[in-house]
Image (cartoon, rainbow, N blue to C red; front, top):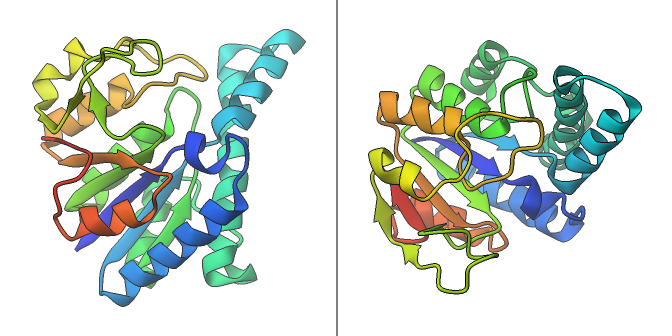
Length: 224
């Protein structure tokens, strides 16, 4: 099976968490040993958002702020890649086409952002479409998709499953902006809806959830 794993910066990088990074490296190796092809897209988390704020206050445009955030995500991707494959994996893919080729060549790739105006959620969605992946697993800082933001609303309820067409009822943002932070970004939702690619949203602080999702276990929220 070809799997896209989208690891939120909230999990790996807010603050940087070396223990979680090591555990994900082990999980990715295990998936590869099981015969899966694995593409991992990581975010820049709070470091990226801090750098966006710094860039904005310096007077950089939103396009330029996005470029800074991409650099942050690629740093975390590079660290995870080298943890898995050693120093010769230091060059992470910077385009979708490059990632697809590298995935076919070696069976595992790690990457961050690609270009301004595109979140790492969208990168994962485009990569899943181009690579004809069977599943996206999004490892995030929530247990799944909720009826509203559980960090702000104690009465929020977790959904075991939801159709793409109904996501707009539980998501706040409907357009891209530098540093956007919600469970799935709007452009990614559009792509996944159009291509009908299933995504499972799981608690990323438990990396073993990714293994369970790959096995087809009911965990987190299935969006289809």
